[in-house]
Amino acid sequence: MGLFDKIKDLTVNEGINRARTEKDAVLLDIRTREAYRKGHVAGTIHIPLDKLEQIKNRVQRTDVPIYVIGDYDHSPKKAARQLKKMGYTKAVPSGNMEEHHGLLKK
Image (cartoon, rainbow, N blue to C red):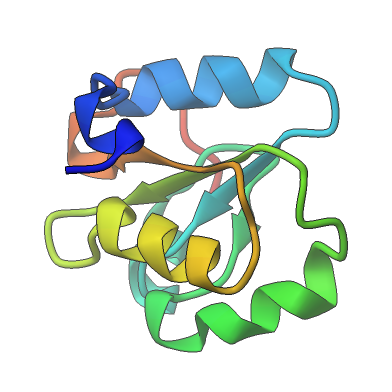
């Protein structure tokens, strides 16, 4: 059990709020293209979970907070672990879109 296993998981709305208020933070949506097109949070970067290595093209700094939004089929926890292995030290799983309360952009 690591340090981050003891931290309370964020809800999707908590992750969105933190990404919007923290300096240089990134809000990353890892759902499929189809799910993203049906509705997403404004200001997100969309990179599907199976193409997560493409983040290097969009986020060069590895020390910025990355709040990862997924869904029940695309785990934000799994993505955050992958990002940490890639050197992104502040990747935070931030809930599933099925639990989002708020406006979505299409």
